[in-house]
Length: 258
Image 1 (spheres, helix red, strand yellow):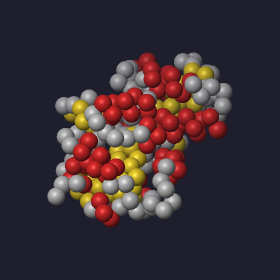
Image 2 (cartoon, rainbow, N blue to C red):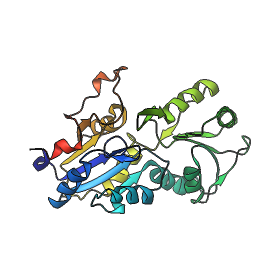
Image 3 (cartoon, helix red, strand yellow):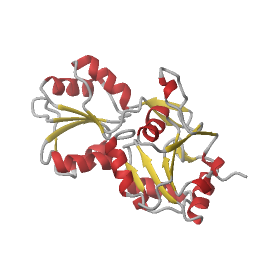
């Protein structure tokens, strides 16, 4: 399999690590690919850490990677907002690090629904009823409705936690507004950023992830072969029978197992 591809796109959470622990032998798989001269890119819909923090974490487990190879949905969203909504006012259902990163683009944060131009939704482990009502009221006042990711759950040690997709569903029912744009997987916004990092002469690419509706769906949407690993989220049918990977793997270690 590895001889067939020049470039490998890896999901992070549930594929390379889970919670605070690396997937067993993921470091060996990545380092072997690097030794073979393969291009590697790491992507994540998770917004609870900066790219630098993800890089430091992965390096601590011995992965021979560069910070420039890591991309998350916060980065993609920040670029879009800087270009299209400079100096606008936003509210976020998201954690402090996400709000801080968005604020660094020059946008202003507010909890006043009458002043909010943009509602941004992502993973928030501090979600409460007050946050939902501020968001719903902002939507009722005409705020744009964007998401950094649409994952229903996020894999953690011992199971999964509620993620942005579930929050988005609740807000859509509460406000009778539909999500307008998603900037994480499987969006074109994310894919465009990935393509900037792929060498034009290395387009034989495999995308590896643990989630059908984001990782595998993105590969299928943009004509990239995919591999589904079983180290992350549980897979529920829920009408997703049409989303099928090219390969099924136990873990990323299967890429190099003899």
